[in-house]
Length: 128
Image (cartoon, rainbow, N blue to C red; front, side, top):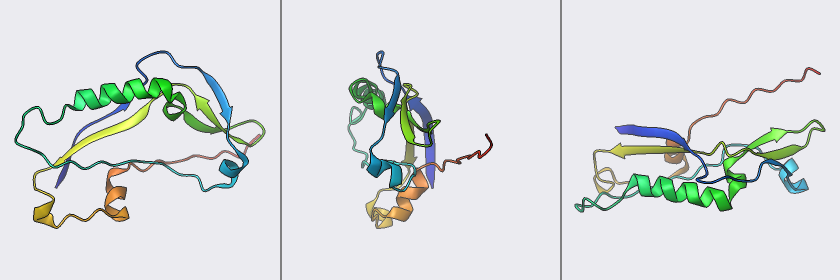
């Protein structure tokens, strides 16, 4: 069983530019959806193998330089998709499995990845 130990938003560690960025014409017609990334690590015997706080602090520093990744997609008044740079951050989840990947014949797959990527409900309003 997978146990979620923590979920939070990691925000940029310093001030970032605010405002909206237009997306390309390609992005206007591309399928929309949640873009997630999942990393799996085997636990080692070393107690200093992996500091989750270092990972989150590093992500927070990276989001200063790559600040659009900490924003949100919105639909502008003209109907175009725009990126609102608002420093709301990236969703971060830490989970554990009390078995080794070898013991469960672990094979990465799209189905498994979808278990770790949270579903996002989108509301659309067509009222003026």
